Length: 144
Image (cartoon, rainbow, N blue to C red; front, side, top):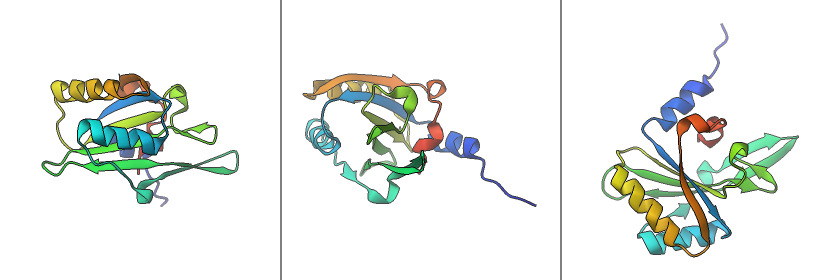
């Protein structure tokens, strides 16, 4: 009997009840997170243990993931770098530089809108939009 991992089910579970924002910005990832931390009162840090590695055309690509766990409640925030050396974590969103995932707790429309508005205040951020699960083709790329 051969057991196989159901990536579709795994990614559905991973994304259940989550929100995803797409961000276009000319800032480097560490500069962007520093700005987010300052403007939105968060504490994003790079987490090399959950860095995403994809292999395409016999090459490895590494996508940095920054993490912030809210001290109260169980809401987790992750900022993914969508680009590495000409490859994309989510190729269907080539125009986006960062992906912000919120999961683990309920996020109200108001909280989400506050985050979006805060991000739009950051110098160097050109676009912030909410991405719906149906639009994301390569969801499994974001599971760690």
